[in-house]
Length: 261
Figure (cartoon, rainbow, N blue to C red):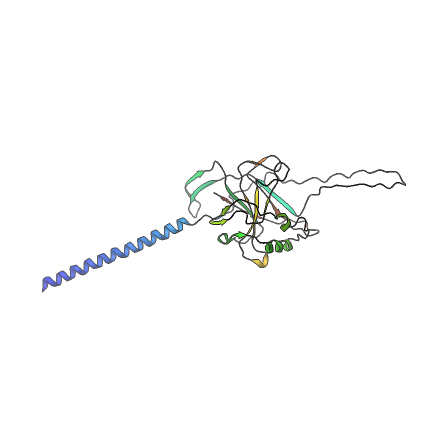
């Protein structure tokens, strides 16, 4: 009888040990799954580490034309003029960076230098956080709403008329695929002339905060030292709307994000 009791005690201990091992294995596998899942999360666009403004210029106002005709004559003249558009402004420049593995405090365990740049630069006038997982192409109603909010009342140069094309490359915003030829698009100029190959810019939205016009995001696909509007080389060119109200003399802030890939 005593031997039977000892055997039963030993068997119970073995079962308990097997249960402990199984429980530990489940916990370990669960931890590894969580770690693996978090490791797969796509990086979202973030604010740049630094921005250096190297130039901020505008066109000079032309001198008046002198017209001196004799009294008693009727002079017929045809006038052409190029007027700087205060309802739009542009950002152009270079992008440099590294791929890095950092912790939450910014400490780096390893990084990789970039010999070429690829990705996008984003600009939005909305200071609230962007929901990058909800990114999609902006639709016409959002552009028209932004026309109202930014006082872009001229049908020739409002936001809808400016981003009137839909021809652009496929790209990703974090893990969201923006399919080819799906968003309102424009191509800024190269060599002082229009073109439809480089410097694609599209309008996106994260479909939130519609009461304030939604979070409209202007995105331009990065180039690698491409010839730009003034024959200098740039990695990106983009234009964004400014407040078009009559008498407006201030400046609208834009918040910049960059995504390197």
